[in-house]
Amino acid sequence: MGFLCTHIKQYVYYVQKKEKSSLLIKLIKSKEIKSALVFTRTKRGANKVVIDLQQAGIGAEPIHANKSQSARERALNDFKLKRIKVLVATDIASRGIDVNAIEYVFNFDLPEVPETYIHRIGRTGRAGLSGISISFCAEEEKHLLEQIIKHIKLKPEVVI
Image 1: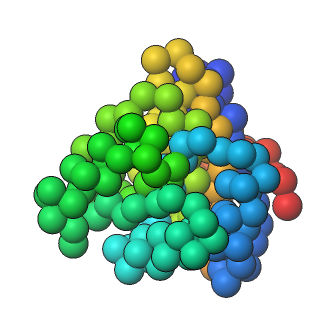
Image 2: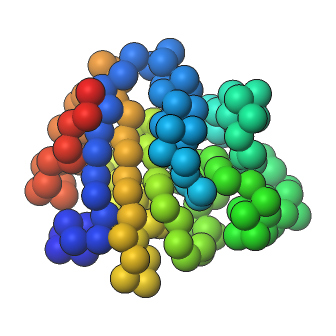
């Protein structure tokens, strides 16, 4: 657990489900984020987040199992080369994401399995660099956050 504590700052925002996209857009713009990995629970959710980000003028691409291998590789390459600022992934598709210097990991949807949280946030803070993990927690996800806190034995800082 020390790795999580020393390299990755963890925050949680309590937010209504319908407000998650607007909060994500606001944070990406206000913090001038250069690279972010956003995790959603579903492929459909990933596609919707990408559309919302693109409509807000933020370069983003989805990476999930419904995308062809070439489309996933292209999105990952565009992300590595900083042609896009945000990669939106499901947990299954994220296993192939090996990118250094990802500033932020967003848990747009909290994972249903606490161990998955560790894998998600571990995508930042690599190679001794610091990273930031921001989780959005809707009312119906509070039990998932409680399970994560119990598993990692650390409570993320509550922002709102």
